[in-house]
Length: 219
Image (tube, rainbow, N blue to C red):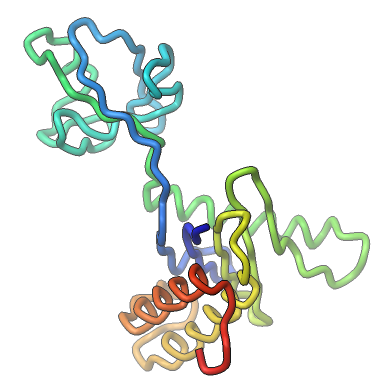
């Protein structure tokens, strides 16, 4: 069981904090000879597989590194266009690592804003007045849990479907936010949270939740 990530979204839908606690990665690294027997294309500034699945490499997987060096979107670490690099027989054999595309900071901001809108739609669709909005979304590999405070701040946790104690964890994160962000004289309301004590106490809370699933008195 695991807690994957934590998001804090302000009442306007802006992402003010995000922490990846555990990101399971299905990465495959293979050495290829010329010509490359996979079809790659540029999608959202990343180089992804569009045709030709093999050895655990799937359509939609992105190029993560070449010869052990991480790439920067569609460019190598040296700034060369990856597609042009792979067209040159002189660059073979070449080792390429593929995996699930990593979310950029801008993509995380966009997704937080989209969830904020879905949360509002969920409240409006309710047949009863005063709906709490979306509290949980479930997939086959993770659950998204959301707790909204009276002031409109949303605390979101993505966790393994089998992980217990998430409701208690969400309220613990709210407590940490109140103690180490709101009471920080240098913190401005609704702005990104940059506080070392907040980070430290959040990580500690996640460790406790993963091990015990609950919070006892004084935790």
